[in-house]
Image 1 (cartoon, rainbow, N blue to C red):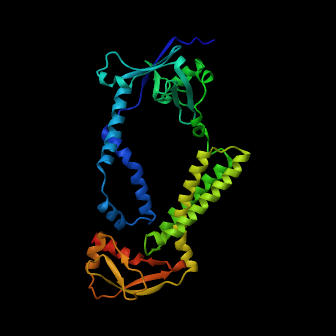
Image 2: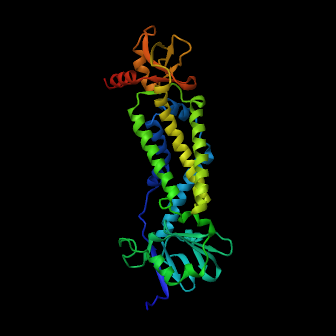
Image 3: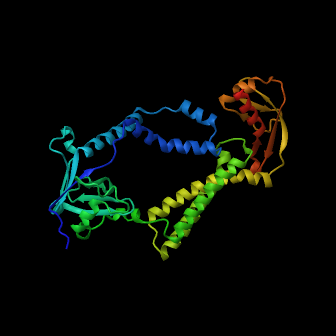
Length: 363
């Protein structure tokens, strides 16, 4: 029988990150989302520029961003200067006696087992939560970030269980204390349930279709506004409602947590709406009117093309195209291919003009 030591001391092994890295990580997600929308043509550069010009970031938002970066940096310094102690009495997160970061002692935690309300292991994320009875904030520990002091185990061994998890299992902590019911959804594997697996496959197919077809298309909607977005918003909502209903039905045979149903339904609706927007251009090519050559002229600002036929849409161009259109005489006739699709929505084939603008800018 294995003898468990009385006291286990673990140290934090995460690499130190500068505030610049934290800032880049904080900006990565929204930047990626904006890039994707521009890539598939759902967000035009001119629209983004207008939004950035008119946006006013409240001082509270700036302070919040700075606060998040500062908090992450401070907690990182604390963890590097502390150790995690686990024994028969409880779990303690304490600064080292010789640490110069004594100002951070307010982050120390000491939770005796007798004062523990529940201990929860989120298997997929390897996060352990210790929640005290007193109502204090829970202690959340990522098991893979901690290893036994003066050893190289835990983090460096492939497929090995983290040291902290082995210690807690030896102490039977998870058997002695209940699991926080709020974490039930976190352990649900979407890739194993038959229904959610199909939904994920469908989302992947729709994303792939949206990206590939948008790259192959030469036409685009004349406007990016509520009127042109409404059919695709409605289709996304309908798709989300239908998938939610189907998942609820599938949940009766094999449980799907409510949070996962709602999350997947929202994600599916958004992806279906984007795919509907891209696919709508193809549908208009087949079911809409024919592509006609219409007469346009640039305006005085060199940012818009105005149709001679007032029924046709005005074409707005971003600022980077201004020099090209200014090179054209204001009375010169510019031929643009226009198609009136379903519900009276117009779309344009600007491939030739966009290519000409690209060559002009390079030269």
